[in-house]
Image 1 (tube, protein in one colour):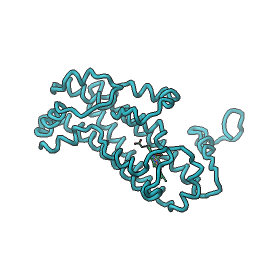
Image 2: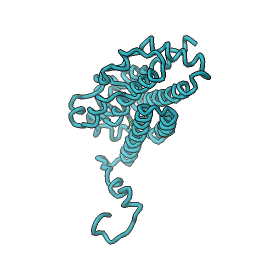
Image 3: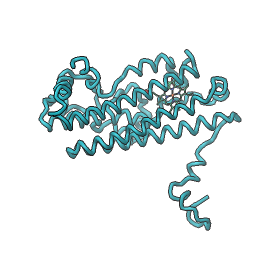
Image 4: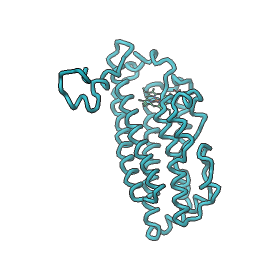
Length: 266
Ligand code: HEM
């Protein structure tokens, strides 16, 4: 192992603690496929964090009234989201019988318990507390802190108001921990922007980047649903849900909802 007192010099390993990283996989069966399952799950977790960090950056830049810098951060988020989606390819190498060879040891472990995924959802603006266990909010203070902070979309709406667009005060002053519901006045604001992209160039570019982030997120959910159908058919999930049926309902959710619905008005 590296670290103080070790005569062996390997700065690559030391810098990013690669030896620690490679000691974090502990398969519980003899199945050679379980190791791949753990590895790809860990890769996805790290990518959730990469996307989260960029969303957090975008939020901070908007607070500083720097929409171009916010757009660049969102562009970086989108690139990591694409990697996240393509990483389902590795998972799909697993056949149903190979998965069933170790599924039992998962017990009640489920992706619903991923606090980094939930941090990302909270940061983007999905504050559905029915998806979170109170024990997770207590166990992961960073998750609770994220839940209490204004989301990226809250900051977008505040930015639009500062830019002179008629976003109602009830939205710019809203309790950030409350779930956000689609709003007709916001839909009208986006419609105004999309009817005159040249006049609202900066806000229009921001809207397009937001839509791309939302699109990639929904794309990830859709790919996950397909993997679940492939592995479980109609069986229940290890977290206790109806499995694919539950995920199909989750797939209906859209981030930044008015950016989707306003298209009917154009
Ligand atoms: C064979 C592979 C997989 C299967 C069969 C599967 C199955 C499921 C099922 C059935 C659910 C619904 C909740 C439940 O009852 O457990 C779920 C949720 C979830 N899974 Fe997976 N999953 C797989 C791989 C992954 C991987 C690799 C990740 C990423 C690390 C992941 C992340 C999630 C997340 C974040 C949720 C919660 C979604 C939400 O709350 O909207 N899953 N999964």
